[in-house]
Image 1 (cartoon, rainbow, N blue to C red):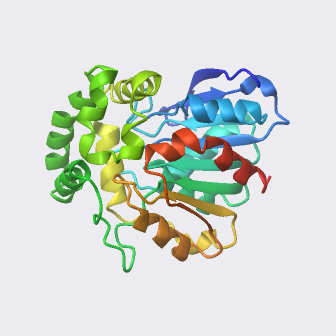
Image 2 (tube, rainbow, N blue to C red):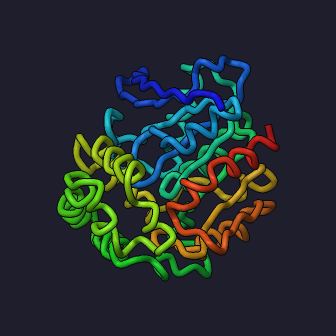
Length: 300
């Protein structure tokens, strides 16, 4: 087993905007496969210890992109899901990476798909892990099966930016200013039993740290993510046909219900179905990191 390492770098774009990047296992060198990581909502570019260690064990470097408005990444008001691709391209150029694997977890799922669609010549394979489908997906009831916390959050988002900002500013202390022991209670409406059992000890502490660091400048990144999910994504999923896309989703997920994964499997021609009957939302990230990486590396 290799030791996992993580460093943080800030890249300043020509226009002056900053992007925070988390670099995992970078000592492996340029011949190693690179994995672009898109975090959840809210979140930042730290991939978490499970994915970081699984990557180190497989000789994979990680490039964790912190989306605009989170942590040290400059906010971009009214950004779309597709706009993240330009940021990824700028980061890859800065790091001298010609091609990469891409994974997106939860709210990072749509951003991973956008990266693959917009940067086809540079993306070898993509995984959407517990990721959302489009708000306008034909035949999908976007909100059906979500826990109460998400129903209230998206309900506020549907009322517009001001209402969503007010709602998230009230909600943020419940995940950033509490002890790890309180997190499972704070998130109770979103945690099936398979996830609730995980939100303890070191993992709960890791989640609180991620939420706290990502939201340190305020909740604007979270606001902009939610509004982007409910707006046109600004790229065509048909561009992903035959592009080595895998969709991972748990049947017990209360944050992004399994119907989203089922829709993506049918909506992206040739997508590999990884619909898991015993998983929730967090259990995929904690328990399936090695499987997800092995699946991606088959296309490297």
